[in-house]
Image (cartoon, rainbow, N blue to C red; front, side):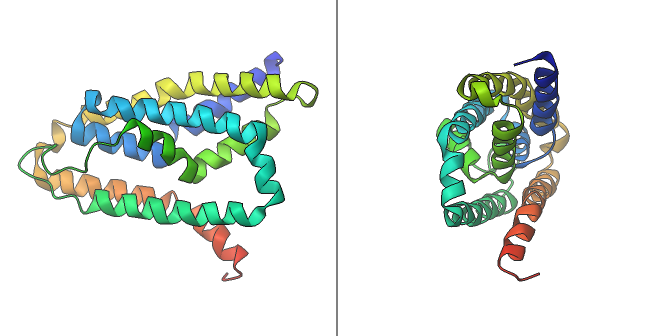
Length: 207
């Protein structure tokens, strides 16, 4: 991988990792409701999940979707349903007298990994990396290098979001503020789905 391609990949990885999306909203909410230590399994799960997905998409899954477009559409529909369910769980969590007692349950490592497969932003970044940041004559090696570079940028970026959530814990000790915060995170998660919903609607010729 040449310097120009590497520089472009680092910039792309940073923008995709640090900007709001399903992963960052979940990490922020977990940091607020449960603290950093309890959020570590989700952090590790997200990072591992993105790396595994990058390699899987780059080395074969992407070709499967090209051959079976209906399967990709089914996955998109599943993404919408699952993330709407997560949004509902966050929004309807009953805040108790202090943060953590009535909050959404702690998400596990496995859920952090699995979340990537129904995360439309993760699919976008994986398909982009596999097509725009690899070398045709050295595809497998460059795909592996690109995945590792992305992972190196992704790790500190997701940690920042979890720490941002932790920093808000003192301000959000009031149960009313916690309820408002969880509602805002749920709405942000739903908003992150809007491009995918519009795409599905156009595919179904509803727009």
